[in-house]
Length: 389
Image (tube, rainbow, N blue to C red; front, side):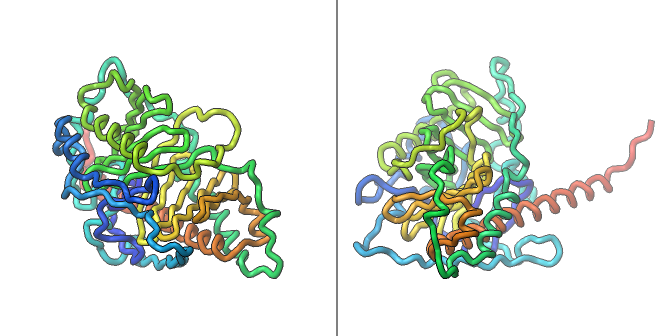
């Protein structure tokens, strides 16, 4: 399943998109894969009376994507230039894909007009007089800096940084440009419930299949619930509306599972110093290909975790920088403008080319859904007769 924040559901037909993989996780603690989680999670949700309000589909056991079975250094086999097939009319993909490749959006509206399992009435029930919905307070652009990031990465890729005669990555490195936040753990159970993740500050988030979000702040006490309409509610973990019981149960389970079984990515990397975040960013978009999982946060940070060799890149458009975490979990942060000037090794250049295409995928998808939404609105407007006084 591929989940993005846009205005419609679109079938994604890129050959890179994975199919038939129901559950994956980030890196496990130790050498053994995490234990099966499907049955335990289903039991926990059933105990909370979750049922149909959180998602649907078959139950699957948890498996790990990060256990290296060969002692030697693995070989990266991802295609840095995956093909994106588009039509000539509206920019939407050519061929429909199976269920796993469906692109979902935050407002829950599909091309077929079928809404997710949680109804608008249930959403309204979550609003209590004591915790009225707060309007979203964000200065980020609507695309969360995708255009800026695409321009920065495209400029580096166009310079062919791995073809320089005298590559000097040391001149590009800038430890002061490390990101302020990144995804340190994740569990993809979107076949049934959603994707749970942990940020580097130990806050927890879940992006549910019904396009709502639930965040547990790093203090472990305050929770932040975001509806499909982007209306926001603030509660405490020990005091929240009964309508959120199912989702809080899932959040607790994701948190416990990640804390007990998954390794924290870039644990030795200290976040960039600066003012404390006024509001915790949430996961805006994610999708999986055969090669990687792509995670886009609302503050603009784009993270790509590669499955085969467990390398990661974290791109920050505001700092104009990329952090590369290699298979030995060593990390270095580079200014993108400096990579364009001084060059870089082929392994980093390949990942930047891959990132460029994944950003393009996000931008094209958003553009096509926006066009589709506008066309639908126009059609509806034409069908409504004018009112008379």
